[in-house]
Image 1 (cartoon, rainbow, N blue to C red):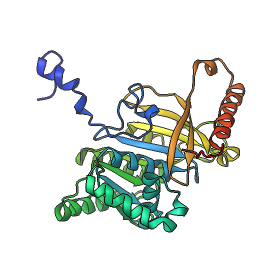
Image 2 (image 1 turned 180 degrees about the vertical axis):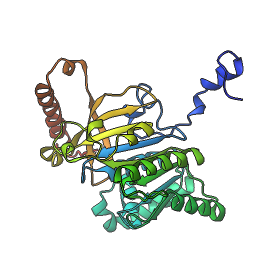
Image 3 (image 1 turned 90 degrees about the vertical axis):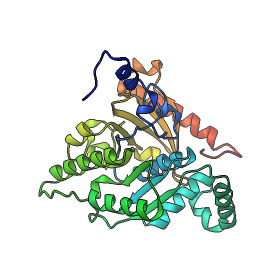
Image 4 (image 1 turned 30 degrees about the vertical axis):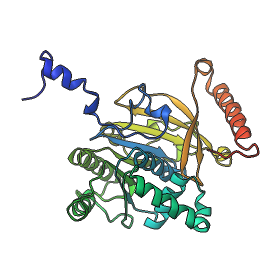
Length: 314
C-alpha cells in the first residue's frame, strides 16, 4: 500500500542500512559515507563517462574486482574486448601481476586461484562477449536467466562494457533516442535483478582536453543523466597519460554529495585505480588555471614517489 511517514514500521524500513545493499567500488574515497555510502546499491545504475581511450574499461574492471574481493558474484558483459582479454585483466588486478606478465607467470596465477577456491572468500565471475551493436537488454536478460537455471549463478552486480555500443529493443533512427531507450532498459534490468549495474558512456570531443568531465560533456543525450543514479566523469589529458594520473569528478549522485573532484592514479597494467587527493579547501579559492597548477604539483609529487626504487603505481 506504499510507505507512510508516521508508523514505526515504515520509519525503520526507510532507515534500514540494508535497504540499499551496496557493492563497494574498492576505492575508499568513493565508498565513503559522504559520496556512495558503501558503494552502488541494488537497483541502481552507475555510469563512468570518459573520452575514447580514457580508460572506461579499466574502471569497470576495478569495480568488478572489488565486488569479487567482497564475496559478490559478478556478471561482466563485454562488447569490444574478447572474454579472454577481460579475464586476464581480472587476473592482473586480483593477483597484482601486470597483464603483460601474466602469460609468463601461469603457475602463480593457477596457485592463486586454487587457494581462493579452497578458501571460498571471493565471489564468482562470468564474462560474456557479444559483438558491438548486436546485444540488447533482452539478450543479456536471457543469458543471465539461462546461467541461473543451469549453473545456479545469480549476479550481485552487473558490469556492461559499455552501454553506448548496445542496441535498444525499441529501434530509433536518432542516436540520442536510442541511447535514452538503452539507459531506461538498463535501469529496469537493475531493478529486475535487484543488483547494481555499472556501465560507461563516451564523452564528446570537448572532453578530451577538458580539465575534468562534466555533464556538458555527455556525448549524445542529457536524458541519460536524468535516469542514472551515479555518474563519474574521468579524464586523463594527453600530458597526463604517461604519468598515469587524471581527474575524476562526481557529476551526479543520488546517494550523497556531487561536484567533487578527486585526483586519481590509474595503473592500466593492472586495471587498478587509487585516489591521490580529494580537492581540499586550499583549492576552493583558486581560479581554474591556478587550481590546475596546484593539482599538477600534487600529481608530479605523487608520481615521483611512486617511481622511486622498489615501488609501483599501486
